[in-house]
Image (cartoon, rainbow, N blue to C red; front, top):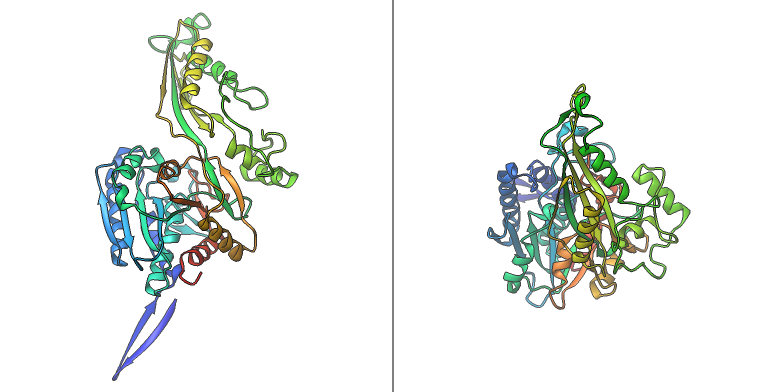
Length: 456
């Protein structure tokens, strides 16, 4: 923070000029306290508040702002022009967050900023309010210093956590207003404290399997073991989905998926040890010669994400469950065809469960995997800036997550994409006590300043 004292006649005026970090620390608590959860309709008013808040911040700093309401939750497009001849940079972020409740084990209210000596905590501090705010605060600072090196377009959406179902429609309909030379996106994690540039993202399909074995739960003393148990059926089905080595047992699941080649992410004992510590597990299923991060980022996966059946309250009800529900998540890699995976899964489930049971399978629309180019002018600039800030050459890797914007932006001709995650690898994204390491934040602010500045 810079304090200037201006003297006019007998009057002294104190002007406080805020730097990037000051701007960030002022705006972050305001952004986090708005519970902009997109997965639950009861937070619709908070979503609206969040969109209005972003609009106000951009307008205060000289941006022209348009809000679009015909594509689900409001989409905000904020533009700032430095020079008609300057390059235009599109920066994307999402303002929606995952649900959170203090009863889950949070140290404090998840929709408030709290901190200790090393970290900032709160829902959205890493995913994605805190990360995109790094670039927003930097832009605001560079504008007031007249050192911004690009024309800027900030694209802020509010449905990323539910798969960005209308974002592609928006990009198609508003293509003329999205003209840019490159896109810079920060929505991920560094790798083992090393800077990272992401070259691709896995696709996704979510699904629910419903099992019904009777018209209602039955008395275990009067009917067991003479009738089928929906919990047993669910457990058997889940146990057959994977082989002992962690590979998915569904036929054709890996069709079209190609194993990574070259030295990208080659494994080492150190990388395995770090990954075990980060995950808090005793065993991993990384593929031979590949690092855990590369296995996660470039191989398909089928994960059970939730199971519900029977009575789980206090005490015991002693009844046989008539229904069970299994939720699962599939991650796809380039080369796989989602429709083949869906057909194979449907066929396999029918074969595993007896016809005497009623089974329903619900699958969400898929988001395809995407692989990006590893060389362009803007990636080279990012590599240089990250190297200068961290003293380390950034690693190129494939992300295991899914980011719909990456797939959709690839459809825009001549738009270079640069993905630089700025959150720490133990940030607990989507989890309890989501956090942003303060040292990592400082590195992120410094990177953003170097990348966006006209002094580069």
